[in-house]
Image (cartoon, rainbow, N blue to C red):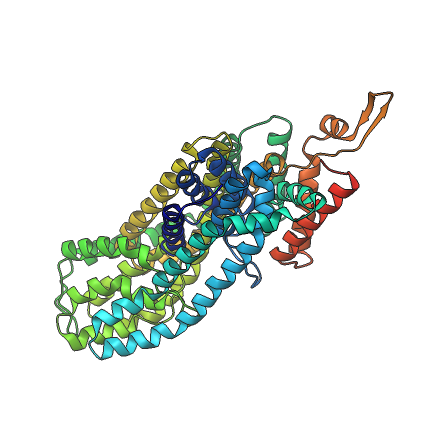
Length: 547
């Protein structure tokens, strides 16, 4: 299959659009979404959906790096792998083999992204000089520099993959069948790597029973993933409520006093005049106007990583998020320059919990505090907010939503990527708005309250996530034993049938457990696990152990 110039351009534009989603947090950089788009452009939606489902499960745990390792980028299978699966479909390449072939490209793309983040480290200082010099147009451009480089890299990657598909196909056709067949088996085993990565972050002795729950529900009852999630959520709720109930009696008086104090402070702040503040050049607003400004600033949380770099991380982007609010609060240019420059300090927080910081920042500014005076308080909030956000979203919401979407995509339903995108972005938008409302009302007191609840919330998320991932190990990792004994054409013994009767899904579960052990205890990197899986796929194929 040849791809004409227009389709090459469209795939390049689609890849550029999806790559920017890695920074905006809109979850466009997922195999499920990217593969579906490539399938639509190339006129083979069915293959695109199936490739997206396979890639999504394989890359489920690659959204978060572990121990300083660089995870492969989902754009490898999402763009390059899907192009290969569609263009070489007539040559006998299936989606599992395309997934295996896409891993080198996934690594190259991730190294390219690492290079962009490194190059972007100089943007913050240039932006600071632009602000001091009053060059606000240059400042805006620099604050979005990482996003622009991502878009350019995405277009180049997508266009090259589409325009060079035939050359890639001819090169891959020279590989012997023993290798391609083994890579196909290895591709079916690859989701175990993603599951092991997720479990290494979530699983411990306290969540072990929920791992067993997920395995039993999927292997013996054939319960769908949504049912496993609901069952695990109910049991986690009951377990944690019981534990909290045991503490509630002893802490009742203290907690009641704290809540009363927080509410009293909030009511007092609403009634208190804001005219008695020191002069900082701020144009003080009423609480109603300030709340409107806080809401609009919360919506700019999507820009938090537009200038992400290895220098001050999200610091440059944070200043860009609050830039319109600072312009309204500080009419004099000298005051505005000072506040923007001071807002460029180090920042690292989950974008969906950023509105808590921005609302607190705006309140302190409106009450007469300089940005530099509240900087330490905001920095102290980043740790618990980042922990809550990452554990809740990366290890609970995203895996559940992506596996639901992948399950639908495996059935050639376009509802898979659509439900995933709408569901994820709807939930995350709700989180941003809810956090802005809570942050504005409670301010610093909210951060203390959430820090006390962080362990409870994280624990519940890990319980549900462990059950879901354990269930997916059974259904998402395909490992079938090929060892049989026959006599005169009659089947006497099949190892796979024996295992299905004794402990269904045991091979995928055991292999995922092995990878979990290698990562958790032996500190293996994800790349070593991928190499091991593909090598074993080839070996087991040549020996006739797996089919």
